Image 1 (cartoon, rainbow, N blue to C red):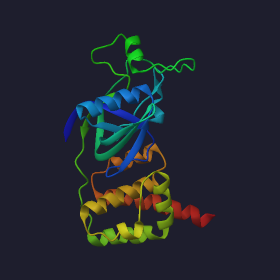
Image 2 (spheres, helix red, strand yellow):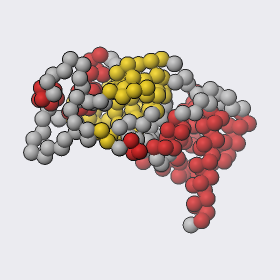
Image 3 (tube, rainbow, N blue to C red):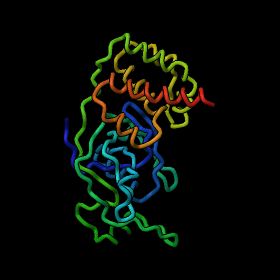
Image 4 (spheres, rainbow, N blue to C red):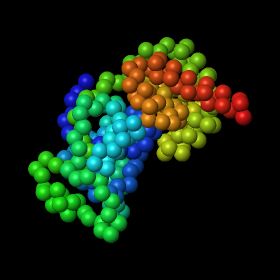
Length: 237
């Protein structure tokens, strides 16, 4: 476990897991400031879902407990936007949240930039427009399943192959179930399990349960439970 202080948090949906690469289009001042900080200082950031049960604080949605540590692998400017290529790493858990320096107030008559907003906040020395958190990173999944358990896992999910692949594609990830499931490399097997998590995940509570698992066997069991629910609904239609 490693502690990271003041980790920038990017709040999005509950569809992101370790082992994923992707791109983000950044246009809000708070996230532009965040990405400039991460790029200039070569710092990671946290990709995390908003917690619906937490409500809002000063107009800002609040983060869930568990997220995925990410780094910027490449970027380019596109007009007033930043296109960020990201690589995901380990799971982290929040210890405490550091709130933005300004409340989230929508003003449709003006579109202030980062400098204007920071001046409005009084240019605090350590203040930011985005949410941050002190976090600890978690150890990688323990690969505790047997080869037999893994093959039974694949056989259970194979009838849902098309649904899983389409769900991943919709969420911006590529899953070739037949090809990916044949690998004997433990790292690639873990990556496949995380992709299946993304394909089956439908809310923050389930994502948090998945991210909190310590081993591949426990994570596979959750996926099987979700897959059985999907298969049951299909059979009832």
